[in-house]
Length: 309
Ligand SMILES: NS(=O)(=O)N[C@@H](CCC(=O)O)C(=O)O
Ligand SMILES: [Ca+2]
Ligand SMILES: [Ca+2]
Ligand SMILES: [Zn+2]
Image (tube, rainbow, N blue to C red; front, side, top):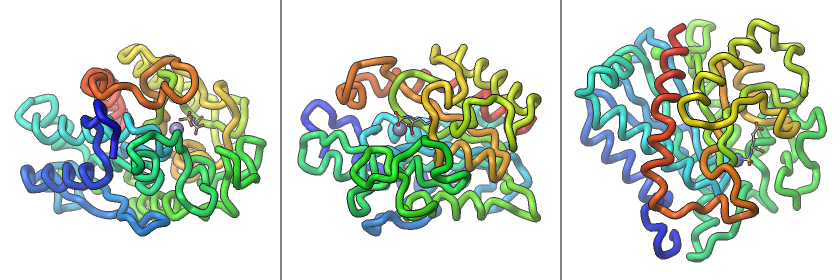
């Protein structure tokens, strides 16, 4: 479990319990489904928030996923904060407007095995990957131009090991299956997404596999929309907006597949801190959770708006 002083962070069981409580407290607007199972057999829960939640309504859908990387525990708190904000505050007119006109999907932990391992001993392990063999970097295992461009490693010992093939990690495959399942009548219902990471305080947009703005699968107009929306969101949380490859080239990452395969307006947020040097930056004290998750409220609202644009 989390070390003393960091009890505010939710371990896997506490996260699941939090989702179940949200559904129990708000059965009309919240329900829980599963994206699938992790390598070690843990369920990867997905919370749905919308009015008439049991009905698949023709409303723009939005996905928020968190904790692809095990040690990035603040992102699980980010997803739980979104879940709490759009259920407990349903009597707020602005919140009600979003919940009644969107279908919001929230995945607080894509990589439950890794995040559990990271805290299991009571001392942080600095773990990033999943728990398959020597570990696969889930965010290098998605199937759009997997391993194409020097943005991942073929060495199983490396932190950015891409896996034996695209989708070899059960966790990325589960997310693929869930997102693929949202193609209804030939149309992907999820219009926008944020994949939360830590740290560096950045708003990132595709592609990661190339430094080119415009390329196969990204027109100038599409790029300009990403930059416009990304910049607008960054103005609200004080993060730095940029193409993800401006940071470093990545391949097999979630953004490239969400946009490349499904044309989902997908962003990666690197949360607090801006820079901490080394591993400490992944483990901010529990007392920053409230501030650093609420910091993204306006950006979340912008993304929900854009999903209907
Ligand atoms: N959270 S992190 O690992 O430090 N950065 C992410 C950046 C993701 C991206 O560039 O698309 C990654 O390398 O997967
Ligand atoms: Ca609805
Ligand atoms: Ca729908
Ligand atoms: Zn990450």
